[in-house]
Image 1 (tube, rainbow, N blue to C red):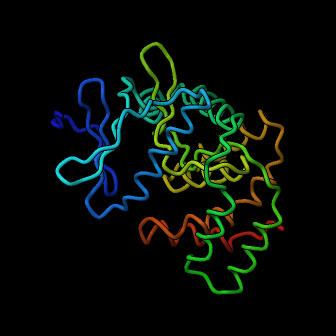
Image 2: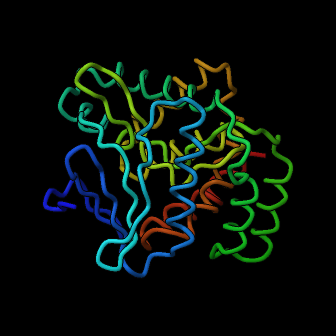
Length: 249
């Protein structure tokens, strides 16, 4: 395997291109269970018929776990937005349409979003009263079984030269309520400092799906709390501020 060409370096992992293969190599301290779960998620999402890179193998390279999948040649939607700011609205429309397509699929063997959120809220750096309130709010939200990406942002969409879109990075995929997935994407735009894009994205999604904006907003404190257990301290502070910033009840 030729791992000379680095595509991306992320927390605890490096992504390489090897011919027609994309090789994601995880640091040695990465949990084996998490890596196998990511590969299983991706394999299960493949079965929904969505445009995603196909898994080829899970292996070890120099004692480190690696996931090998198809290499998709193209540019990320994030890069296209950067290179063509005048087309940003058009790209955001495409972005929302892709997310709606994801939510239209079922993947019944994936973990349930609510179960994952309940675990994360229990781990959050919040007092017992706030955690109890968040668990209660989460329990009161409608139970759905739609495919949710969990980290849907423009850098996880690759557009090929012929305009075909591929969705990558399914490590956080679950089945659950689409509006929770949308709240997560909205907060990701905020974390990146792209507040205008966040608001335009939310407006577009709500308009295209006839979803009340207030309904998505009710998810935001719950999603922010569940996401606050990972990431750096600055991100944690920001996300925890969303837990108390507005009472959407």
